Length: 345
Image (cartoon, rainbow, N blue to C red; front, side, top):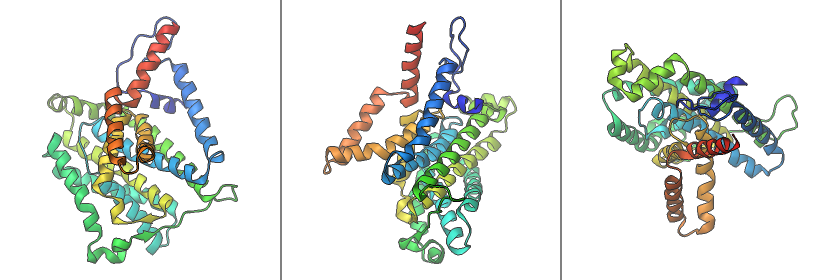
C-alpha cells in the first residue's frame, strides 16, 4: 500500500507542510494522497460492472497506453533520452505474443514476460549505438525506426511469421476458475493488475539508487560521470526497461484487440505516445494514466464535434491543453490541490 501511495509523488523536493502535517515529496498531505488512491482503486474495480463492453474496451486501452507511456516517461522524464520510436517496441511485444500463441500454442499469460524480455533485449541493443546520439538526434534516429517498422513487418521473408499485410488473429482468453466475468471484463482486470504492478516497479526504480543515478545523468551527464556513474550502462539499461514496458503494452493490446497488423504500429502511434507523455506530465508516474485518457477519448470528442475537421479540432484541443497545462495534467492537479490545502490551513 505504501508503495502505491508513492505513485502520487514525483521527484520534486518536498514543500513545507506546516505544523502537524506529514511531509511528502509533492507537498500534498499524505492523507489526501491515500484518499485519492483508495477512491481511484474503488472506481477502477467497480467500473467494468456498470458500463458496456465497448466502454470497458476503451478503458482497457487507456491502461495499455498508460503502460507504454510510463515506460517512455522512465526513459525521457527520468533519464533524459528522447524517443519517438516506441511504437516499434509495442509492435515487437504484440507480434511476440501473437506468434507464440499462433505457432507455439502458448497461453497468453506465458507470452507476457517473454514479450517483455524480447523487447528489453531489443531496447538494450538499440541503446548501444544510440549512446553516440543526444537530444534531437536520438529522437530522429528513433523516429526513423518507427517509420521503418511497418515496412519491415511486411517483408516477404517474414510473412510466414507475421502474416504480412493480413496480420495475425489472436484469441482473447476467458476468465479462469469459473469467475462470473466475460472476456472483456477479465482482460480489463488483467491489464489493471499488470499496470498497477508496473507502476509500483517504476516507483521503486525511480526512488532507488539506480533511479537517482538515472536522474543525475538527465540533469548533468558530466557531473554524473565525475561521481563514478557508468553512464553507458545506465542509459542502455533504461532504454531496455522502457522498451520492456512498451512490449508489455503491445502484448496486452494484441489480446485485447484480438488482431495484429503492421499498419497498427505506424509512426502515428509513436507520436501519440509522446503526446500522451507531455499531456500527462513528463517525469511523473501517475501522469501516464492521464496521457492514456487523452489518447483514447480526445480523438473521439474531436470527431463528434466535426467529422470532416476532426484533425483540426484535435489540434486545437491539444494546443489549448498545452497552453492551460504547461506542466501536464499532474502538474495542474498538484498546483490546485496545494492551493486548496493552503487555504484549509
